[in-house]
Image: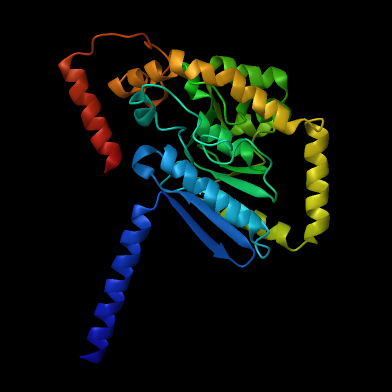
Length: 300
């Protein structure tokens, strides 16, 4: 009887913990000197809304201020890293205001004080690509896709994408991705230097944690001093100025094109990464039903 009661209490505790975690759109765990930060909106392919962006900023700041945590791993729950900003939320906006002076997807408009590794699975596109670029290294699953998919709907890269991407892979390749909005496979990303490791499907998080473990064994002050010097050299000591220009240059576009583009996406145009037939059109009832069924299937 006592064993059954203990078992029942344990089940109740597990259910309670599951419900609490399920409600959180950002999950933070710490194991030794490593912090894992997970975007937990799998039904939305981990698109980031304003609330999630705020939670991401909070989680990364806590990691930076924790003297016992040396490396963070950023990942997405449920098979996708992040499919960008939540266009449904954007489509309902009458105007656009910067979510935070630090960025719209999280703390993307500043230098992160300690190393972060992105564990990339599924889609890392639009703002999700920018989150991956925020990290120092990217461990990418072999079937993952990266790209500036926001090109299709007039949503500019204003979370560090235009600054970090060209610094990582060069201007010519960065313009290929930015102007065409095409998807880049893991193989191509690795050949270009966008991906640091290619791993089997379903293993990115574990492999990223293993990579993080290889960093925590080193003297941390020296590691971080060299890291800061490398960033300083890459951006000619003008990192914050470059990020601010991107923000000032891109933000006016959102009111002119992005909100309208987001409404087109919500209506069913350009779903699942397609870049054809992006112009406004009257959608027949049968296609609306198909889109509803597809959305329901993704939620399940």
